[in-house]
Length: 293
Image (cartoon, rainbow, N blue to C red):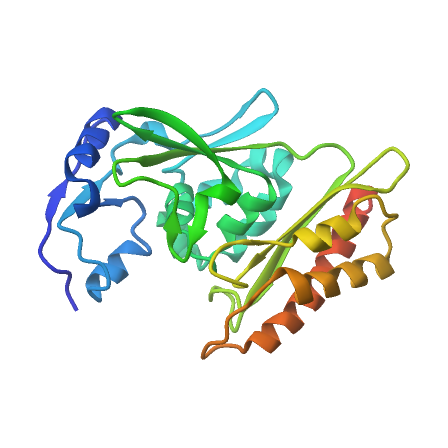
């Protein structure tokens, strides 16, 4: 199949791109990596009248550390994030997440901001950024605003971004000391979308008890699903295998409303949520204590 007719623009600057978005709004789609948009256009699931190609905006490709925060530009390729030493050192949860995204060829073209803006609940980055408390920068000719990840993802393939806005960068805190992490998922084949995935971080306090726990699911609803009840059950408790098991059961029973589809039933996804959350928490506990996992 071929896409429906469209007008193509390739701006040379961010200001030019924002001006095009301001002019065309709902009629326009932004082309970055194109790993989701182009197939949708070829199948005519998406039929934008205007295509704005931002690949010449090299200023949007960067990985930087600023005052205890990681900043990643929207046009940064997945492969660059996957291999960057600063990500491995300061953002190990993200480093562990990246190899689960599709295949090498897709990671070579797909972009960090594009995956987040697409807001597919079966994608890994929205969940990883939600559990890390990321803030998302949106730019337009009207100015700049930052949106917290839980408020950015509002529905299936739907975000808080306005039609004239462009996602330009994502920022999140570096992992504090005594914080463990884990990303784990189950897919039919490596590179497929996950049947279910879990991103988790656990920070221990001075007495060795859980001070801050965060759990977020992939493919468990229409948005990245934070396990708020399970998090509450963990906080203030001494980490143990029994605690991980109990929190996992709470998460699967109370915190998610997984869909049934041709790939997996809701019941099976709850089963995966229980097992994967337990595994993720035990790994995060061990890493928070300084053990190698």
